[in-house]
Structures are given as structure tokens and as C-alpha cells.
Length: 278
Image 1 (tube, rainbow, N blue to C red):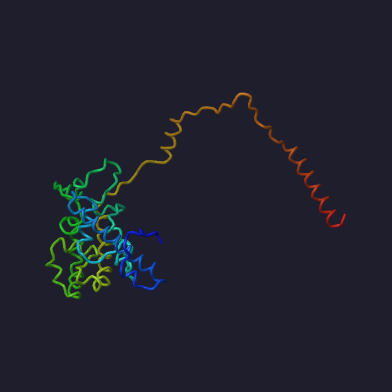
Image 2 (tube, helix red, strand yellow):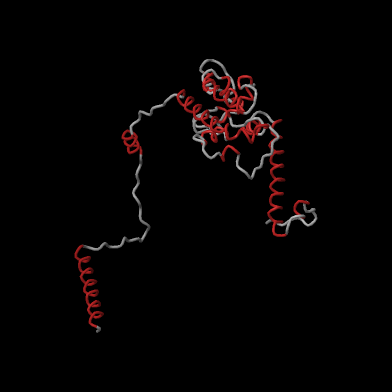
């Protein structure tokens, strides 16, 4: 346990507990304080220019329900979710499968683009330049919005089960939050068990669909050709020994046989002495 500043007052909920429970109670108090500071720091990014941190706060921390940085997100604790990893990748802005273009943080073949310049490649092929963020890929892009249309019936039944307005009446922002695993705050505890499996299946279907749209680049180069070209370009230079250095002489076959025979005789004599008690 960390040392406490003697000048700071001890919280009341810590002072009234038993002595054996003070450390645990104070730990929970500190966790709540740190979580509140963490949320306040993230909320300040809402006023920043568009970026990945601001997008995360906008989609996942929009409501004021209690969140703790010391506990995993509720969707991660679902006991039987088939595509939980797919939803985790989508929510944490991964760049493995290039589902959301705005998630591209590192450049591979071209210089790294600013966040506002990470346009949708599917719309760019049609002559339209638009930011490829979450709401565009999920709700607006003509090449990818069909996935959400396929899951409309699933989300429609989910909103009916949770006593919410019809999913079709949701705004694009509300639809995006819902499919990313963020139900409205009033049904947060009740809806997570029902929302997470559907959202995970949607994330998997979206990845498979976007992957099918990406061009397949086949490398036709031969390893043998690369090896030949490498051999022809390599410039080998002999290893020069230091002045006065002489390599050690190697043993011949006769020398090795003689050493083996001598060692063998020594072992046999020693074994005879030990067995005969000499």
C-alpha cells in the first residue's frame, strides 16, 4: 500500500470500517478517484481536433454511467460470445485487417497521413473523398453499409427486447454506438448480455466483407532469382589474420586414435582396480 500524505484527511468511508478492512477500503477509494480523473482527462479531448482518441471518447465514453479504469469493459466478461475478439479489435481501433481506414496509425508503403486525410478507399475509387471513420463505414459507405442492413432485423429484435424505440428510428450516431457494443445507459446492465453476441457477429461479418473488397496482391517474384541476384552483387573479402597470429594445428586421425586408446586403457585399469579392491 502506498504511503498517504499525513496532511490529507482520510475519507469517511475508510475511517468507519474495521482496522483489518481499512487497506481494502482505501484501495477502492483511490481507484474511484483515479478513474474519475481518467474520465475527466479523456472528456477534454472532445474539444480537440478530430483524432483517434477523440473518436474513442465519442463512441465509447459518451454516456455518464460509472466506468472504472481498473475493471474490463462489460462486453469482455460475457461468458459465451463467439466473436468476442472481433468486437475487441473493432473497439480498440486495430489496424490488422484495415476495417476502418481512420484507424491507420502507422504507414506501410506511403507516408503517414493525418487523421482527416485517411479517406475511405471504397469511395475514393468512385471519385468521392470522405473520411473513412466508424460512422461512414458502418452507416454511409455504399460498399459496406449493406452489412448493417443485413443485421437490422437482429438489432430490431434487440431493441424490442430492451423496450427501446425501433432500431430503424435511431440516428446514425446511435446506430454506430449500438453496433459497437454500447447500448443506451438506461439498459446498460440489462442489455449487455443480449447486445454483445449480436455486436460481435456484426464485427465479424464487417471484417469478412471489408476483407473481400480489398485487392489481393500476389508476389510473383522467385526466391531463386533473388538469391542469384544477391550472390552476384555481394563483394566478399578474405579474412586477414592479425600479425604474428598462428592457427592451432589440428589433430590427425592417428593422433585421435592414439588418444582414444590411451583414455580407454586408463578407464579399463581404473575399473579393474575398483572391482578388485586394489
